View 1: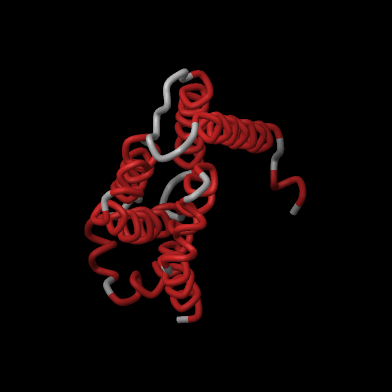
View 2: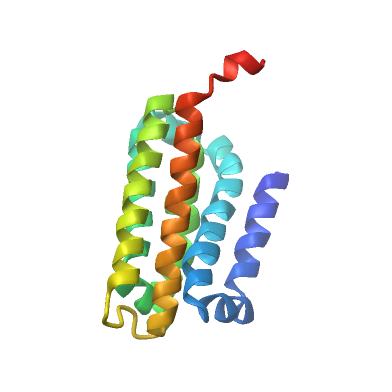
Length: 185
C-alpha cells in the first residue's frame, strides 16, 4: 500500500499544472525526466494493482512478453517528435500521456520484468540502446526543427541525452557480460 501511495502522489504531483509546465518547458527534462517519472509512478502503483486483479496478469501476461511488448510500444510512441509536440498543444494527448505512461507502460513493466529471462532482459536493453542511438543521431543531425514547441538547440541537447543514455546502457551490458555475480556472493 505504501508503494501505491508513493506512486499515486508522484503521479498527482507530476500532473499539477505548474509542475507539468516547468517540466515540459525544457525538451530534455520533458523526455528524460517527466516521462520516466510517470513510468516509475506506474511501476510503484503496480504492486497493489497486481494484488487486486492477479488473474488478469496471470492470464494475459503469463511469461512477461505481452507486457514488455506493450511497454515497448508505449515508450516508442512517446519518443516520436510529433507526439511530444502534440502533448504540449493538444489537451487530450497530454491526458493520454498521464494515463499511458503510468498504466500502460509502468504497470506492465513491473509485472513483466521479473517474468523475463536474463536473455530477454538483455535483449530489451540492447533494443532500447539501439533506439536511443538512432533517436540521438536523429535529434543531433536534423537541420530542421523537429518539434515546433522547442528550439533546435533543445533538440540537439535531447539528442546528446539519448546518446549519453545509450552509452550508459552499453556500459551496463558490458558489465553484465564480463562480470559473473556468483563470484561475489
